[in-house]
Length: 283
Image (cartoon, rainbow, N blue to C red):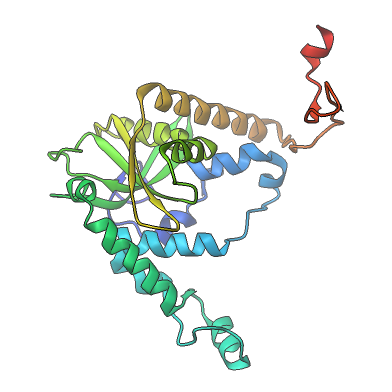
């Protein structure tokens, strides 16, 4: 079995995983790809992708050190400069082909990871023959899909029926904050997709857990076990996006999120502006 043939892989390099964007002329679907498409098919088709932010870079460093530290030297380089104020520092930074991180960023990430690795739940999730950064490839409705699982716990361990994904969130003061953030990012869609892919590939994983770590403040992880209805709803949303992308591929029509003329009104002077729904107007 060789990537990208359908299967579950423990040894796919991140560069190879992210480079897989097309198979036999078809766009390879993933959770992030489908969401980018669904937000604006026209922009997606034009090749537009959001540029990596500083927060995304810190997140990538965190993910690498936590789940695949052996790949650090493949993707990152530690800067000999604390800041890039001088011409020499800027020239060094601009010459790099890998993601540049400072010593301060490294120290911060390592401190967070040490706190996580001492958490009882983390120890239980990662005990035994646990696999990190597991790539999956399968087909749904004749279309190619891929997914990258953060943690596939030991099948014989206490979390042997689960897939675990690590998230860093900004608002984690209360459980209500955590749930609101998770809902905003629709993590149940990722969970529904990953669970469906694992099942299709013969891996009995019925649960999807989020191991959530605060981006700032004390390291107080929150672990969520997403329910059946949430995962089923998420999987349905992903399949809807897939069907929409298939229709765009078939017709060559990729609509923009602001196509047409939007009719806007407000019910009262102090109320929010809202789009007039056609069915509501008729009623």
